[in-house]
Length: 217
Image 1 (cartoon, rainbow, N blue to C red):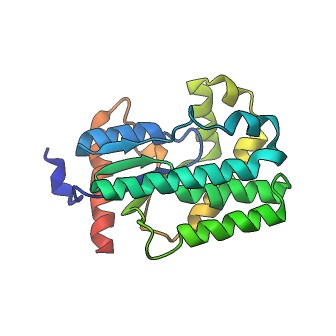
Image 2 (cartoon, rainbow, N blue to C red; image 1 turned 90 degrees about the vertical axis):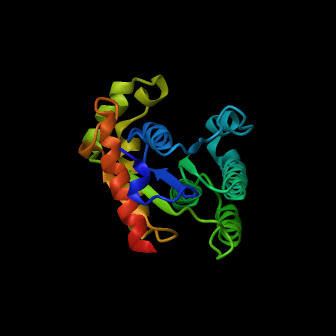
Protein backbone atom coordinates (compact mmCIF):
# COMPACT_ATOMS: atom_id res chain seq x y z
CA UNK A 1 0.00 0.00 0.00
CA UNK A 2 1.22 3.49 -0.84
CA UNK A 3 1.31 5.15 2.55
CA UNK A 4 1.47 8.57 0.93
CA UNK A 5 -2.23 8.08 0.20
CA UNK A 6 -2.98 8.99 3.81
CA UNK A 7 -2.24 12.62 3.08
CA UNK A 8 0.71 13.00 5.44
CA UNK A 9 3.03 15.71 4.02
CA UNK A 10 6.64 14.70 3.35
CA UNK A 11 7.81 17.66 5.45
CA UNK A 12 5.65 16.88 8.50
CA UNK A 13 7.01 16.87 12.04
CA UNK A 14 5.25 14.21 14.13
CA UNK A 15 5.94 14.00 17.87
CA UNK A 16 5.16 10.91 19.94
CA UNK A 17 4.40 11.47 23.64
CA UNK A 18 3.32 9.42 26.64
CA UNK A 19 4.51 8.05 29.95
CA UNK A 20 7.11 5.33 30.42
CA UNK A 21 6.13 1.95 29.00
CA UNK A 22 3.58 2.99 26.39
CA UNK A 23 5.86 2.23 23.44
CA UNK A 24 7.00 5.65 22.22
CA UNK A 25 10.27 4.37 20.73
CA UNK A 26 8.54 1.48 18.96
CA UNK A 27 5.91 3.80 17.50
CA UNK A 28 8.59 6.29 16.44
CA UNK A 29 10.59 3.65 14.59
CA UNK A 30 7.58 2.07 12.84
CA UNK A 31 6.21 5.44 11.72
CA UNK A 32 9.61 6.52 10.43
CA UNK A 33 10.03 3.31 8.46
CA UNK A 34 6.52 3.49 7.00
CA UNK A 35 6.84 7.13 5.93
CA UNK A 36 10.56 7.06 5.12
CA UNK A 37 11.07 9.81 7.72
CA UNK A 38 14.06 10.45 9.96
CA UNK A 39 13.89 9.87 13.70
CA UNK A 40 14.74 12.18 16.58
CA UNK A 41 15.50 10.49 19.91
CA UNK A 42 16.52 11.98 23.23
CA UNK A 43 20.30 11.88 23.76
CA UNK A 44 20.73 10.55 27.30
CA UNK A 45 24.36 9.39 27.17
CA UNK A 46 25.75 12.90 26.67
CA UNK A 47 23.68 14.54 29.42
CA UNK A 48 26.17 16.02 31.95
CA UNK A 49 23.58 16.46 34.71
CA UNK A 50 21.72 13.14 34.79
CA UNK A 51 23.96 11.29 37.27
CA UNK A 52 24.23 14.37 39.49
CA UNK A 53 20.46 14.78 39.38
CA UNK A 54 19.75 11.22 40.55
CA UNK A 55 22.21 11.72 43.39
CA UNK A 56 20.64 15.01 44.55
CA UNK A 57 17.26 16.02 43.08
CA UNK A 58 16.99 19.29 44.98
CA UNK A 59 20.39 20.60 43.94
CA UNK A 60 20.31 19.59 40.27
CA UNK A 61 16.66 19.55 39.12
CA UNK A 62 16.79 23.12 37.79
CA UNK A 63 20.07 22.52 35.94
CA UNK A 64 18.71 19.33 34.40
CA UNK A 65 15.49 20.96 33.20
CA UNK A 66 17.36 23.92 31.69
CA UNK A 67 19.65 21.48 29.88
CA UNK A 68 16.67 19.54 28.50
CA UNK A 69 14.97 22.76 27.43
CA UNK A 70 18.03 23.96 25.53
CA UNK A 71 18.68 20.61 23.85
CA UNK A 72 15.05 20.05 22.81
CA UNK A 73 14.79 23.62 21.54
CA UNK A 74 17.89 23.15 19.38
CA UNK A 75 16.60 19.81 18.11
CA UNK A 76 13.18 21.27 17.22
CA UNK A 77 14.87 24.09 15.34
CA UNK A 78 17.19 21.63 13.56
CA UNK A 79 14.30 19.47 12.33
CA UNK A 80 12.48 22.42 10.81
CA UNK A 81 15.61 23.89 9.27
CA UNK A 82 16.28 20.49 7.71
CA UNK A 83 12.91 20.67 6.00
CA UNK A 84 10.85 18.37 8.18
CA UNK A 85 10.13 14.70 7.60
CA UNK A 86 10.83 13.64 11.20
CA UNK A 87 9.26 11.43 13.86
CA UNK A 88 10.24 12.70 17.31
CA UNK A 89 10.31 10.57 20.46
CA UNK A 90 9.19 12.79 23.40
CA UNK A 91 8.27 16.44 23.27
CA UNK A 92 9.64 19.67 24.67
CA UNK A 93 6.24 20.26 26.29
CA UNK A 94 6.43 17.29 28.66
CA UNK A 95 9.43 18.71 30.49
CA UNK A 96 7.63 21.80 31.72
CA UNK A 97 4.09 20.40 31.93
CA UNK A 98 5.06 17.30 33.88
CA UNK A 99 8.62 17.02 35.19
CA UNK A 100 9.56 20.57 36.18
CA UNK A 101 6.08 21.04 37.64
CA UNK A 102 6.42 17.82 39.63
CA UNK A 103 9.76 18.91 41.12
CA UNK A 104 8.29 22.28 42.07
CA UNK A 105 5.23 20.71 43.72
CA UNK A 106 7.36 18.17 45.59
CA UNK A 107 9.81 20.81 46.81
CA UNK A 108 12.84 19.58 44.86
CA UNK A 109 12.84 22.76 42.76
CA UNK A 110 12.59 26.12 44.50
CA UNK A 111 9.77 28.56 43.64
CA UNK A 112 12.33 31.03 42.26
CA UNK A 113 13.96 28.40 40.03
CA UNK A 114 10.57 27.16 38.83
CA UNK A 115 9.43 30.68 37.96
CA UNK A 116 12.70 31.31 36.08
CA UNK A 117 12.36 28.02 34.21
CA UNK A 118 8.71 28.51 33.22
CA UNK A 119 9.35 32.12 32.15
CA UNK A 120 12.19 30.97 29.92
CA UNK A 121 10.08 28.14 28.50
CA UNK A 122 7.22 30.49 27.66
CA UNK A 123 9.57 33.02 26.04
CA UNK A 124 11.26 30.34 23.92
CA UNK A 125 8.46 27.91 23.12
CA UNK A 126 4.99 29.36 23.67
CA UNK A 127 5.27 31.95 20.90
CA UNK A 128 4.09 32.11 17.26
CA UNK A 129 7.74 31.94 16.18
CA UNK A 130 8.48 28.54 17.69
CA UNK A 131 8.16 25.69 15.14
CA UNK A 132 5.53 23.50 16.83
CA UNK A 133 4.99 19.96 15.49
CA UNK A 134 2.26 19.35 12.93
CA UNK A 135 0.73 16.76 15.24
CA UNK A 136 1.38 15.19 18.64
CA UNK A 137 0.53 11.49 18.95
CA UNK A 138 -0.33 10.73 22.57
CA UNK A 139 -0.06 7.05 23.50
CA UNK A 140 -2.35 6.19 26.39
CA UNK A 141 -3.53 3.17 28.33
CA UNK A 142 -4.72 2.10 31.75
CA UNK A 143 -2.25 2.08 34.63
CA UNK A 144 -2.56 -1.72 34.78
CA UNK A 145 -1.66 -2.12 31.09
CA UNK A 146 1.32 0.21 31.40
CA UNK A 147 2.63 -1.55 34.53
CA UNK A 148 2.36 -4.88 32.68
CA UNK A 149 4.46 -3.50 29.82
CA UNK A 150 7.06 -2.09 32.20
CA UNK A 151 7.31 -5.49 33.89
CA UNK A 152 7.52 -7.29 30.55
CA UNK A 153 10.46 -5.29 29.23
CA UNK A 154 12.32 -5.84 32.49
CA UNK A 155 14.60 -2.83 32.78
CA UNK A 156 16.25 -3.06 36.24
CA UNK A 157 15.83 0.61 37.22
CA UNK A 158 12.15 0.53 36.24
CA UNK A 159 11.56 -2.73 38.16
CA UNK A 160 12.93 -1.13 41.32
CA UNK A 161 10.69 1.94 41.00
CA UNK A 162 7.61 1.96 43.24
CA UNK A 163 4.13 1.52 41.79
CA UNK A 164 3.15 4.78 43.50
CA UNK A 165 5.63 6.63 41.24
CA UNK A 166 4.18 5.08 38.07
CA UNK A 167 0.68 5.89 39.30
CA UNK A 168 1.64 9.52 39.87
CA UNK A 169 3.28 9.79 36.43
CA UNK A 170 0.22 8.25 34.78
CA UNK A 171 -2.06 10.78 36.49
CA UNK A 172 0.24 13.70 35.63
CA UNK A 173 0.36 12.71 31.97
CA UNK A 174 -3.42 12.42 31.77
CA UNK A 175 -3.84 15.85 33.37
CA UNK A 176 -1.22 17.35 31.05
CA UNK A 177 -2.68 16.03 27.79
CA UNK A 178 -6.19 17.18 28.74
CA UNK A 179 -4.82 20.75 28.95
CA UNK A 180 -2.45 20.58 25.97
CA UNK A 181 -3.17 22.96 23.07
CA UNK A 182 0.16 23.78 21.38
CA UNK A 183 -0.61 21.62 18.31
CA UNK A 184 -3.21 19.08 17.09
CA UNK A 185 -3.42 15.85 19.13
CA UNK A 186 -4.11 12.26 18.10
CA UNK A 187 -4.81 10.04 21.11
CA UNK A 188 -4.08 6.33 20.56
CA UNK A 189 -4.93 3.60 23.05
CA UNK A 190 -2.10 1.08 23.27
CA UNK A 191 -4.59 -1.82 23.22
CA UNK A 192 -5.88 -0.88 19.76
CA UNK A 193 -2.73 -1.97 17.89
CA UNK A 194 0.28 -4.29 18.27
CA UNK A 195 3.12 -3.17 16.03
CA UNK A 196 5.53 -5.87 17.21
CA UNK A 197 3.19 -8.82 16.52
CA UNK A 198 1.30 -7.18 13.65
CA UNK A 199 3.46 -4.60 11.85
CA UNK A 200 0.63 -3.91 9.41
CA UNK A 201 -1.23 -2.21 12.27
CA UNK A 202 0.87 0.85 11.41
CA UNK A 203 -1.53 1.46 8.52
CA UNK A 204 -4.37 2.05 11.00
CA UNK A 205 -2.19 4.58 12.80
CA UNK A 206 -1.23 6.33 9.55
CA UNK A 207 -4.87 6.58 8.53
CA UNK A 208 -5.70 8.29 11.84
CA UNK A 209 -2.71 10.62 11.55
CA UNK A 210 -3.72 11.65 8.02
CA UNK A 211 -7.35 12.16 9.09
CA UNK A 212 -6.33 14.34 12.05
CA UNK A 213 -4.01 16.44 9.88
CA UNK A 214 -6.75 16.99 7.27
CA UNK A 215 -9.11 18.25 9.95
CA UNK A 216 -6.61 20.90 11.03
CA UNK A 217 -5.90 22.36 7.59
